[in-house]
Length: 342
Image 1 (cartoon, rainbow, N blue to C red):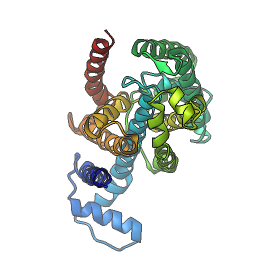
Image 2 (cartoon, rainbow, N blue to C red):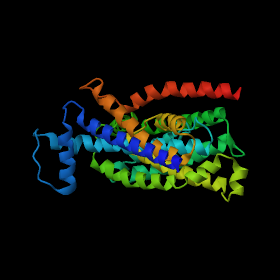
Image 3 (tube, helix red, strand yellow):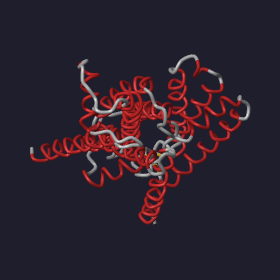
Image 4 (cartoon, rainbow, N blue to C red):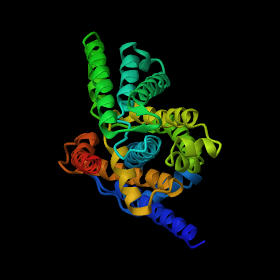
């Protein structure tokens, strides 16, 4: 009972941090907006209240610029971190991540194909569909290449992911050499990994799918815990490990693909956050999954805040910030894993 109460307290504490960071990220920028004005806008939109604001443009800045951008950052960061936690459990490897496994590259390929075919101008739905298909296919290829009897070595996992990402990168390069200048600009802007210009249509595109799939995945925390024990133990407890891995990897790939569609490639969120979460709260996926989701949202919102204020008024891509933080941590994990293997 005491452990359950502690888990609930941890989640409530992180939710409070999330809300605080959420409001801070809306408040801080080229124009500082007081907290009270933010809550006024939120209450006005939720309950159709007639409220007066101190600044003439506060409502427009909050509702049309910062609120959708921060919401997208929160959802994408949470989704990437949750997917990373799932993949680390499935592969039983702390190095597993959508970027390293090539799943993000697969989503990028789907997005590039959509841009090249001009489908983005017809409907926003084409890009996530193509991204989901390509990311899942690539994820399964890496899984097959790196797994042997339900286990994966760090070296094989990384090499498989790098090999497939390189192949996909070559295919993407081939595609973009044959597209128009306008499509090239669209791809370059998207590929840098940024939340600049995110609007309410982006929120509407990803919010419900990411939230619903994330909650659905969290229901399988027990099965993910059992999977860590090995295939034989999973079979004895009534779980088909191969079938379950495919199912859970598909769901994780959908979340990654949705995130990549609206924000471009943002690396290392799914690697850093779940690993640090396990160091703090333990290995039980019942607590790791929700805490990873919440922490991922906090992490990406903070990174985006730095991206748009560090060199203000010039903005840099949030993907640059996450890579600067994530690459050294990845090297640390790699060195640690090498010591354990030898």
